[in-house]
Length: 159
Ligand SMILES: Cc1cc2nc3c(=O)[nH]c(=O)nc-3n(C[C@H](O)[C@H](O)[C@H](O)COP(=O)(O)OP(=O)(O)OC[C@H]3O[C@@H](n4cnc5c(N)ncnc54)[C@H](O)[C@@H]3O)c2cc1C
Image 1: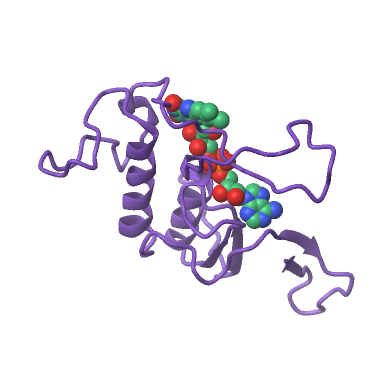
Image 2: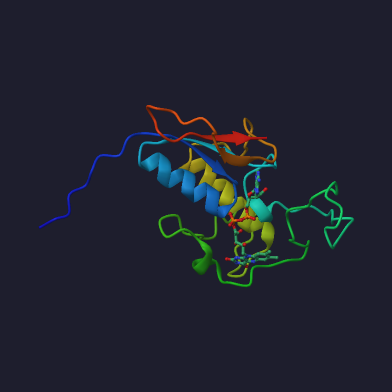
């Protein structure tokens, strides 16, 4: 006998982080009819693949007020896995138009190619345009002190 599926109520869901994991989480939640907002402390999708030449002034992270540089990608980095192992199963990481010189068709491409792929995924699969415009800034999820008698459980996102 087939297992019975109970209907899922549509929820407002916050996804913290617009890296590879957050993007696909948002896509799956939208597929399940939830309304989703993706929060990221940066202003772009891509997570650690958003390259910056900056490095942290405090490598041991002793100063809590230090400038945090999320990406540990360096300029000459190429992937250490072949692209066919890196893509989402239903959105393969295949070389994009050959006439676009900004893309890297190699099997072990540079980090810019990975970021371009994640932007493509965000644009096509999450109806975004490649930016996290509305919700940037470091944040954390917290359970509300006050119980909601109707919804039972309340979470909030603080920035
Ligand atoms: C140097 C290096 C090379 C790598 N090379 C490969 C490779 O070749 N192939 C491969 O498959 N994998 C590689 N990886 C693994 C890599 O971790 C994954 O490919 C993938 O990018 C991880 O995605 P993620 O979404 O889990 O995390 P991330 O890409 O780190 O994204 C997390 C996001 O969450 C945001 N965030 C975190 N906390 C908060 C907060 N409190 N508030 C708001 N925003 C927040 C961050 O700003 C970030 O944008 C490499 C990793 C590193 C470090």
